[in-house]
Image (cartoon, rainbow, N blue to C red; front, side, top):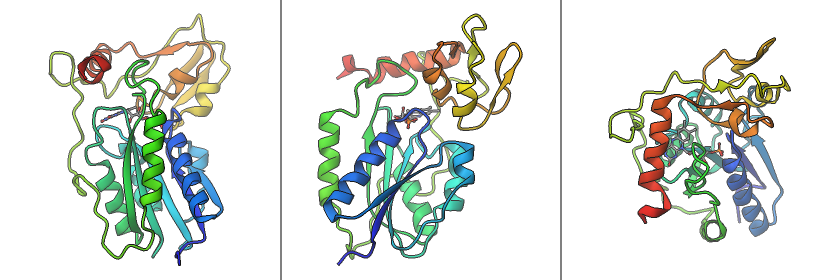
Amino acid sequence: MISFNSIRGIYFSPTGTTCAVTKFVVQQLALRWSLPYSLTSYTLPVEREQWKPISENELVVWGTPVYAGRIPNKTLEFVKEHLKCNGAKFIAIAVYGGRNYDDTLAELCQIATEGGLAPIGATAVVARHTFSSTLNAGRPNEEDFSALERFCKEIDSESATIFSAPGNPHPEKYYTPLKEDGTPALFLKAKPALDKQRCNNCGICVEICPMGSITLETEGVATTGVCIKCQACIQKCPQQALSFTDEAFLSHVRMLEKTFGRKQK
Ligand SMILES: Cc1cc2nc3c(=O)[nH]c(=O)nc-3n(C[C@H](O)[C@H](O)[C@H](O)COP(=O)(O)O)c2cc1C
């Protein structure tokens, strides 16, 4: 007997890979147990406003991208506030760009446990690093999806042992991004640069910014609020009018490509 009657995938996914992975897991589990499923994104401000509380009859599959080795800092408050429901079963998914997922799974399972849910599984999946067009391009690939299929088959929904995810459940620090020379890459305040010649004021970036930080101005768009470097505006701009030109950021990307790129294997 399983203790839930539907499966709910919940995810934050500015550039789409966490959405794809969470959806795949949810569909596999729904097939396995012949149950209905639903998907809830909390990527956009409007989606966060429309939040529907978790019900105890749902198996929750929560997908988060890894930012600096943890749950993205700017989503943490939302996760803590909404990942609550006494007795609901819980699966954590961390999607990362091949550097490391560090404490993400442990942190997510800890928040779920504190919110009354019961973790029964967790997995981390490599995806293309959203900072780079080459780093882990094509991932998750067939092999990654096969591994996810096995993960879904092996979940014991009514396991009596308390599940423990790898990592520190109470992390204090975030990973410090490094430049090519090994010193800290300080790009916290960097914002996408706009090529005014290319921007045609279509407003797509305004709609898809997870922080609601981009506004339409007469001379093109402007990032007026906080930027989490998620790359959504850059990847989704049909005019390729936005890019990161911050030298510390670019040096970090080169470091990632050199250290974690294919040639290193
Ligand atoms: C601000 C930021 C920080 C990141 N930090 C890490 C990291 O610490 N380790 C890692 O392997 N990948 C890291 N990544 C890569 C993302 O985890 C990866 O690209 C993920 O697939 C993005 O998910 P999305 O496509 O759902 O937006 C980072 C990405 C961003 C935007």
